[in-house]
Length: 161
Image 1 (cartoon, rainbow, N blue to C red):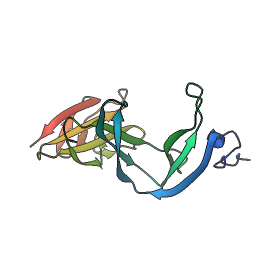
Image 2: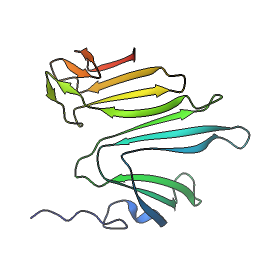
Image 3: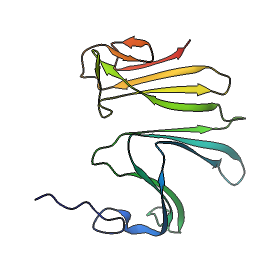
């Protein structure tokens, strides 16, 4: 008999330290703007999230071992039994350079590659330049292909035309 999935608060899921969470469904691709730095210097920053399935966004507060005060926390929890995600943090200097990001299909030897084994991400900058990142399991042999790029490397980063 399979064990029941942990509930939000309790049952050893690690969520019991969250205080009065606000929970909302979140889309597969989204970005959050925030301020990075310290009290003397604050820079605009953005976190980009590319998820592969249903997820929830928690806005809450928690205590941590190293900072014994109530600290704001933002948490993304995917609902699938197995899930992958991509998070890119960008700091503004002086502006945020990423205009858009997208997860793309990745194939290995012509066959679709499951997200747990490889990912392809296209990043478009505000100046119009586009880049592709292919990251896959190094133990896999064969040609990886995404967005017209073919490589046998497990990690490939390059600018698209």
